[in-house]
Length: 334
Image (cartoon, rainbow, N blue to C red):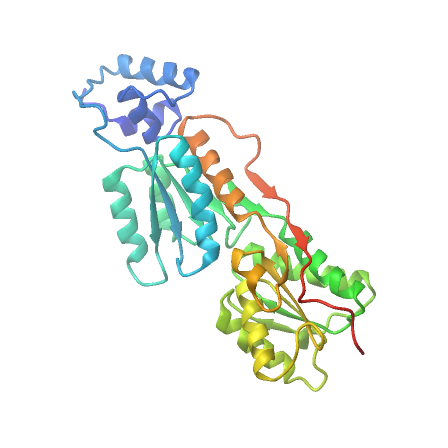
C-alpha cells in the first residue's frame, strides 16, 4: 500500500484538509470527537508525522473581495481580523477583480500557503475553482452571495429586503410619492433584495411601481452621480432618492449640489450601509445600517467552526438592518 496523504485521511474522516493538518501538528483548535476520528484513521493507515518545529506553518484565513477600493470592504476586514486575531490566526486579504487569470493565481497562492479557510465577499468563483476548493477540503463561507441562493457553502448577509422596505416606507411617511431608486449590481442577491423591498413598500402604499424611476448603479460614487442625473432629467423627476449604497447616495448628492438643488429642502436622499463617512457628509445621511463589521465576525466564526469539523446550526445567517435617521430627508414640500 502506498503512502497515505492527509487529503485521503480528510476524505475518509469527512473533514477538511486543514482540520487533519491541525491534528497532525498537535494544535488544540479541533473538536474532541473530530480529533479522535482523525487520530484513529491516522493510526489505521500508518500515517507518519514529519518532525516539525513549533510555528512551522502559520494558521491563516483567506478573505477575498472583487475589489478593495471601498470603505465597505474595510468594515468587513475589521470584523474578520478581530476574530482571526483572537484565534491566533493571520488574515490574507486578496482582490481577484474581473481580470483574466487573477482568480486562478489566487487559487495557486492559496494552495501554496495551505489556508485554513476562505471567506468570499460579493465575489464569484468560476465552477472549476469552486470545485478545487471543495476537493482540497478548504472550508468556504460566502458573504453577500451572487447568483443562486442555493450555493454549496454557508452564507452570511443582512436583512436587505427589510432594509429596502424600511427606507422606502420612511420616504412615503414623509409624503413622497415619486421616489427614485438607484440599484446595485443585479448579479448580487443583496441588490435584488433591496430593490424588491423598495417595490414592496410602494405596492403596500397603493402606489404603482414606475420603472422609469429605477436606474442601474454599481455601488460606487460615479454611478450614483449618473443615476441621479438620469432621474432628474425625467419629465416628472422624483422628490426623493433611495440609493442602495451610501457611496451612490453621496454621488447623487453631489449631482444635486451641482444643479443647485438643496438636500433635503428640495430633494430627500437615503442611502444603505451606514459607512462611518456618512455621519460627516453635508448633510449627514439618512441610511439603512447593515452591520458590516459583525457580518465579517460571523463569517470568520463560521469558517473556523467548519475548519474544526463542527456542524452549523443553519447554512444561512442574516443580521438585522436598521434605519438611521439623519438630516438628508424631510417632508415633501409639494
